[in-house]
Every structure is written in structure tokens, then in C-alpha cells.
Image (cartoon, rainbow, N blue to C red; front, side, top):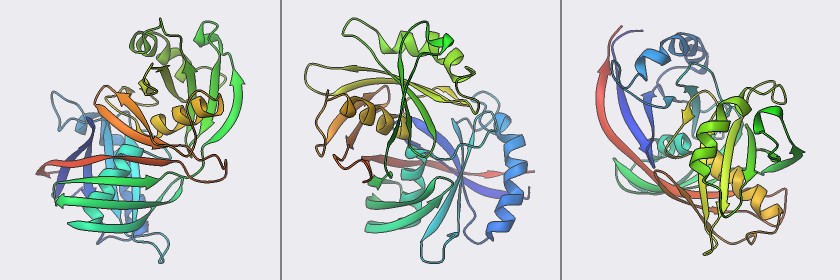
Length: 277
């Protein structure tokens, strides 16, 4: 890879190395992704590299009717289909200052984003994340008897709705690794542990596929809200606060199962630097 600039970005502490490749072709970016996947563990290393949960690539739209594209690489070099916090960061950079609605192509399909940016470094982004598809319950061996609700947000999730007395953080750290790699999920899965609070908010910890514990997970918050709403524990068509270690997201699950889940939260550019070969 030639010398190039990057931005360190974050959404509620879910942080990334973002590369702006809008001047490249989609084909050139696909070639570069193989090299980036190999370099991801070193670039994302928090002691010897830039540090981050993954790498984001902002490129030209795959569909000429849209505005931009996003590719995601996890800390371990794997390629997830979607990343909600990453998408907000990409949309912030693509939109510029002010208020703008744009469509970003992702490996999970196009996503419409409405950006309200105070500056080129910070903004609030609302995203139509597409439908959350409930895929039934399972009790994999790694869950130690806990039933999980499978939900697709374009990427896989397994949600455990815990009791009032459970600690979602303890469960995520202890059970997340084994559930992620359980044979029930041949491609691996993101794992969510959620507690419904007395004020109607959701307390959530996520073990992310290919990353481990992260401060926030946008698709995980959406998938969790879908699972909880379909159980009748929170209302539909109403914004619900999802409390993650890095801060709060606002999620609205539609009563219409074919409509898109809405996610709203911040995005921030932390600093800019230069990558060398």
C-alpha cells in the first residue's frame, strides 16, 4: 500500500481506522481489501498500531444512483456484512457539514442516512438499517442452557434477554466467545445480552464477531431491540434508548416487520494521520 492518509473515527467508543478511497474504482478497492484484511490485526493493535475495532473504507457508490459505499474489516481481518456505528462515521465524512440525506451502499445492501453535522469532525446520524428479521430461537451448547433469539440485520445476531438479576457484562464476557463460534452459527455470530430496565430502556453488552467486547454495536442494538419488541417487552414505532458501555443509541422498531429499523446516534472524527507501506 502506498503512503496514504487515514482518519481515526468513533461512534460511542466503537472506533475505526477510516480510509477515504472515493477517487478509486470499486475494482481497485476490492483488490486493496485483501491487503487490508492481512494488515488489520497490526493496524488495529492498540499498543503497536493505530488502534481500533476495525477498518472502514469509504469508496464510490456501487450503484450510480447512490452516494457512496462502505466496506468493513474486523480487527481479526474478517469481513462483516454490516457495521452500524461504522456506517454513521462513513456517512458523516461523505455528507459534509450541515444536514444531508444520502444513500450508502454496503455488503448488506443500501442504507439511507440523514446526517446533521455541526462540523466536519462531529455530527448526529439517523440510519434506516433495513428490516430486522427474526429467525427463531435456539439453545446452542455454548449458551449453557440460555435460549437465544436469532435476528438478522444483514449480519447475524444471537440475543439473550436476561433477567433483572443477571449482569449482561459478565454474561457477554463469559459466554460470548463460545456462542460466537458455536456450530449453530457456521459463519459465526454477534452475541447480545440485554436487560430491560424499569424505565423502559435496554442495558446491552455485545460480544462482536471478529472483535470481542466493544463499547458499542449499532447492528447489535438494532437486533436486540427487534428481539425485545417482538416479545412485547418494549413498544414498536417508538424510540427506545439502548444503553451501551460507550453511550446511548436511540432505536425505533417498526410494527411493520418489512419496514426498516431506525438507529440514531453520534459519529466523530478523532484525528487524521498517515499510513506508510
